[in-house]
Structure formats: structure tokens, C-alpha cells
Image (cartoon, rainbow, N blue to C red; front, side):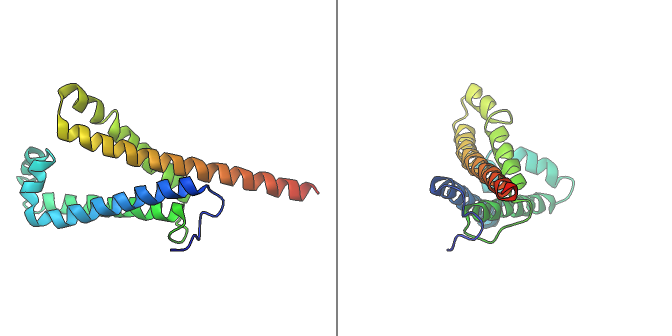
Length: 162
């Protein structure tokens, strides 16, 4: 793929965003495929009770919620790939990368990660570590984009001053 939107960020930031983007695409695909065995998947990730409660309000709700989360992961993936320059630039790219990084880092720490470590829940610890790695990839890439934008403004200001 060609680099269309990230010409001024480092290759390591591009690789981090690309890896994080593809990880999100894989998560979205895994969830979509997992719907074939939805209740087994819900049990495996520790949300079966929550989904059963949701199903009591409407049988389709667990499936609809899973499809919505699939779509969110896919959009996160597209933003990662766009930030890496593998896709065309998406609207609000830098803000999107920062927001996605924050979501993942919060998930990895305050919203599940720390509790999983305290509880000794191996599966949830693994999910928190994955979220941390993906979040760090987005954060590194977002930082590179912000720095590139600042460098671009500095160069533009210097050109105007001449």
C-alpha cells in the first residue's frame, strides 16, 4: 500500500499505527465470525451473564450490540491504517487517533486492567495487555502526527516571515 497521509511521521510510528490498525481489523473480524457461536464467545470473554441479561430485554440485543462493537473496532482499524498512511486521510485523523489511544489505555488500566490483575483473572489480564499494546501503538502514532503538524506550522511560519 502507498503512504498517502503520513509522509512526515517516522517509519516506527507508521509501523505502530499499522499494527494497531490491523489488530483492530482482526478483532472486528473475530467478533463477526464469533457470532456463529455467540454464546460460547460471550462465555469465553467473560460477558455471558451480561449478555443473558441483555437478551432478557430483547433476544436480538446481544447480537446487535456485538455488531455495533464490530463496527467500532473496524472504524478504529481504519483510523490506524489511515494514520499509518496505508489508506487515504480520514476526517479528524489526529483527534481520532488520540481518542482511540485514550479509550484503549483507559480500558487497559482503569476500566478492567487493574481489577483483573488484582483478581488474578488470566483471560482479562491478557485482554488488558492487548488493549495496552494497541493503545500504546495509537498513542505513539498520534504523538508523531501532532509533532509533524507542529513542524509543518513552524515551517509555514518561517516561509511567511521571509
